[in-house]
Amino acid sequence: MTLWTSDAAATATSGRVTRPFAVNGISIDTRTIRPGDLFVALKDVRDGHDFVADALRKGAGAALVSRVPEGCADAPLLVVPDVLKALEDLGRAGRARVRGKVIAVTGSVGKTSTKEMLRAMLAHQGHIHAAEASFNNHWGVPITLARMPEDTDFAVIEIGMNHPGEIAPLTRLARPHAAMITTVAAAHLEAFGAIEGIAAEKAAIFEGLEPGGVAVLPSDLPVSPILLGHARGRAERIVTFGADAGADYRMTSATISGDVTVVQAEHDGAPLLFKVLTPGRHFAMNALGALALVAALGVDPAMAAMDLLNWEPPAGRGTRERIYMDILDEAQSFDLFDDAFNANPASLGAALEVLAGAQPRDGVGRVARGRRLAFLGDMLELGPEERALHAAIADHPAMAAIDVVHCAGPLMRDLWQALPPGQRGEWFATAADMAERAPHLIDTGDVVLVKGSKSSKVSLVVTALRKLGQPGAAELFKGKE
Image 1 (spheres, rainbow, N blue to C red):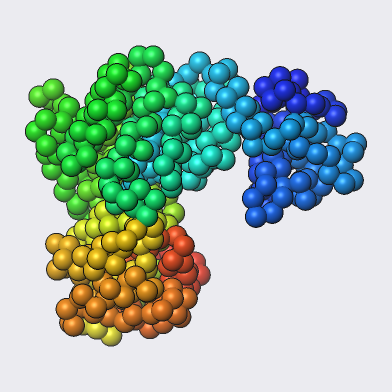
Image 2 (image 1 turned 180 degrees about the vertical axis):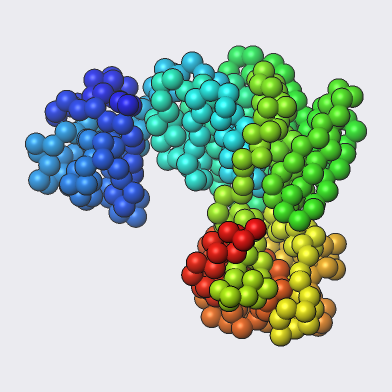
């Protein structure tokens, strides 16, 4: 299906077309480009214009450029003064032609997971369009809007930030009918100085609400009054969720049983019961907020709760898998929680709670008793209190159930030193050093958590542990279930 004709794209961007074209997608990366995509030659560490010829060779339908690259004089191009501004214009035009409902999601933790929950909940309610991966910045939001098909019934836009002033222009571009804040936590403190500044920036998502829009926000945070203050006057309706008695959607319990979290909640005095097919109170709370949002849009919450069963965490955000080290003996295995994509004190605390609730298996490995092990990398961008925030993790209530904690990075050394000797594992200068040693620190029957900021590179540990698995074993043992 054609996404943009050359005429429509030129009108949206006030650009010049060298040859007529029709494209069915948008791409900024020649490594993942698909035939028929419009290649957008953005400039970052490398200039996208250097890759236009390669994109065209790989089947791109056209390229959005600010100059004609060498060897591309006869190619289908859309020439504009500024490529990024033109991409924003294309996103603005994509948003303007859609008559469906647009949803925006932000938060210190859980943006991508909640976005994917909403995608699952709305999948059978109409044509759904949602941001890919974590497309939530000044490139990702306009790309998501520009990729939006005209017949979209529901669009879910993820909006993130690293510095003050980033959310407002993105939400004004998206013009959501409903906007949700998952939570506000100590993340990016280096840029904001205090959590109150983070709350004000997150609450800027309500500045872009369409007339009659809905604001969905947590009710039980210390900064909830800041969120409410920003929502008032910008939203026609405010819906809250949380565990406190004043929440419109109140969670009364979240019970973890194996890989399932059973949630009991209430709304207007009526009970709500639903399941999230992954362990974690934080996932349950995000799901409750998502249910509150879809109900505010007029979607049947019972059907949405059923469709939530089709959701699972995105890779690197708490996914649980069993690694089988022997293709003949199912017991020779361990469980791995891959939560290596991001970390701040709130998300690390939530991950530790999940690990604390997991059940290791005894009597199957070298160590008679199965253990709960954590491999933790630095939490970044926490500002001047970063060392104290790392050390404070030692006092988290969930830590009492963790057997051994291994740490990597200069900041995690503070946590490592704060741990009691019996719980203190090994410390490594880098995640690469940890990854080299990690396979020797686990045993069959263990439950293992890997968590850290993306830039700490603890995903290397996940890769090293996955390599312990025997090819084909997971499929073989699943087939015996």
